[in-house]
Image 1 (cartoon, one colour):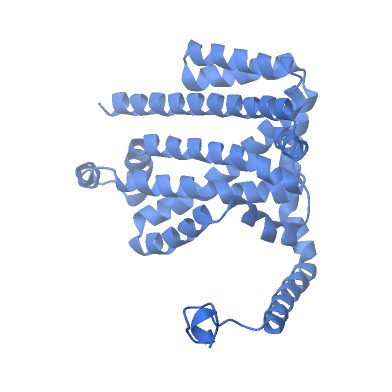
Image 2: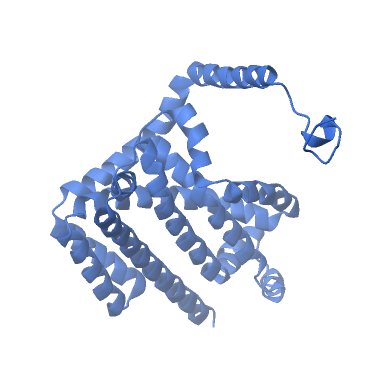
Length: 303
């Protein structure tokens, strides 16, 4: 009998568990096998991630080595082309000028390159998976539990397998960001397509539209608000994960925020956080406005 445990037997007081030696053996076996597998296919892994490294380095060099005025003009042109709203353009101008004035321009460009590449990859991966899930209930039942796990796991957990497989550097950080940011794109693509009115689909079928034509000309245009919301959420999650990914070698604003946390530099952390928020707002407003414009254009064209 165990004392101090309501006079219950020891088996009811302490949960039965494996012995420490057994747990150590299990961990060594799994970890050792995992490391051996990575070493065996290290050349293949490096070859598969090489295009990601090239894409990120190219965009990062383009952002950091181009004169700031050129980058600002191009960015404002893109924002205007997406939103056609001078208020968003003015807000973007003020935010970027403030970032440059605080000597955060280069770090912001590095972060902007990282987020741009990660968002593009997440959309390319998430959009087709969401479409397949929307067209197949069986696929949705498979995908949803996986997405639940991905969105429930703490962001730091993503770094463990990524670092073990890919090591330390920009590409491992980028892969962790993509894994963390892709679930909203999949979910909202699936949701947006499934919410398309069945009567509209029946009308398209009556006019002899094929499955591909219904998808491209009916479902995707009508699902644009949900799709753009998915892009927005992917961008926001990419920006939030950039700080965590800085632990494995990602530079830019995330690295500065991590240093500020470690050294308790309030001002440094606040200013870099402000820059991250400014980028997030610019992306959010421009992409939302772009989605609304596309939706109105589709409605007018179909009418």
